[in-house]
Image 1 (cartoon, rainbow, N blue to C red):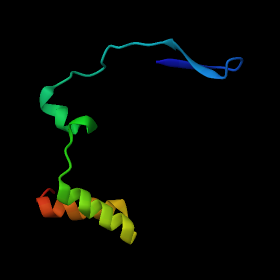
Image 2 (image 1 turned 60 degrees about the vertical axis):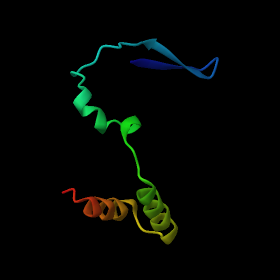
Image 3 (image 1 turned 45 degrees about the horizontal axis):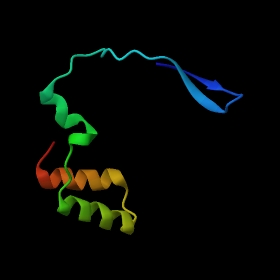
Length: 71
């Protein structure tokens, strides 16, 4: 994808776009894409509470991963 700034119109212009994937697409890997992830109500509450308490996001992630049992 090539994008150029048009200074006269003060907007971005796409000059070239290639829609071919550079990697194979797999439905099994769909869980890695943001739009297919699901956050439980418990996880949302933990994230909100930790954010209000000033706990860093990496600590929140580790806490949720440990609850779930992920490495």
